[in-house]
Image (cartoon, rainbow, N blue to C red; front, side):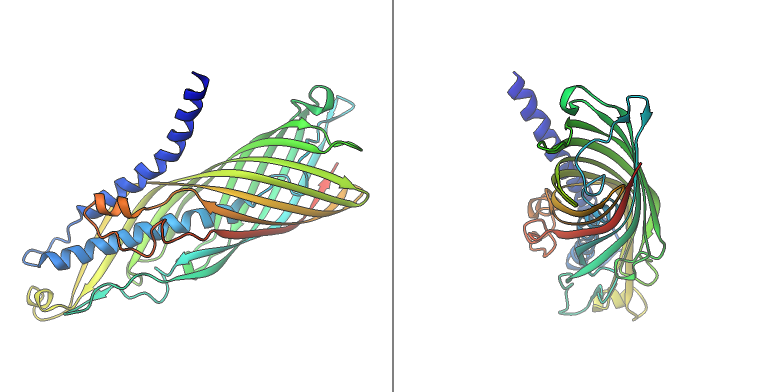
Length: 355
């Protein structure tokens, strides 16, 4: 029975994102441009553009998310900090700069959504875009736990800012807030490593990517992030090493607009001989999930630690060719999860002060 429950939870976590993407694709497959008399081939191209916009945000979402958070929630260590003499909480604060080298579809740069006689939409190219953020974290020890640090509890808080990035259509900075807790498995000592698990919830407000007046697509979205981490660390003299792995689930309520500039003879016929702009919008929820691994290396100077981090994020789901086909769209897309096999490298450098 226990194995059945665990399996059901795992399948539920992995299946929900696929259902969310499939729902958006079904909306693309039913999209109408409001112009009668156009051939089905034009309508199909219009719906394919919608699918490319959905694909773009499915790829964009995890890259933005990992740029917000990095890997380790407490930079450089996996050991809980606990309380001083069992009475006063210890506090750890850190400031870091994050960077994620994300593979982003070029929806907002150098892509022309134009069709004509004998001209169809081209697959959207990708480019490696460095996404950066400034992040401040705090940990407060509230419980020392049992022998060897088992069950010790730290409360976690985080705030981060991603500056505007024209390559992803981000015209304004994004601020993200989060909170959570870390639970100790082992307290780091002379011989023992520090081991802990943590969970955090982060959220950003509504933000826009792109402008439909100047881009072929525009996206308005919030972002929720539920992250879990398992970290082990050990210090030797002035050197600290931490390794960890994590799971992130990103969820957004999105409003997507897209347009296609149609220069076929049929489009010109219904627009007084001029090219016709076809435009529509859809709303829905898009959920993606990723796994990540990371390594921290640091220099300990009494209460001050200088730490660097490097990690790798791999998408667990995304828009599939099957999602496209179920919606009546072509499965031959360059931005499906089958085509997007590479993940995102990320890194951080920062300082942590433990009091």
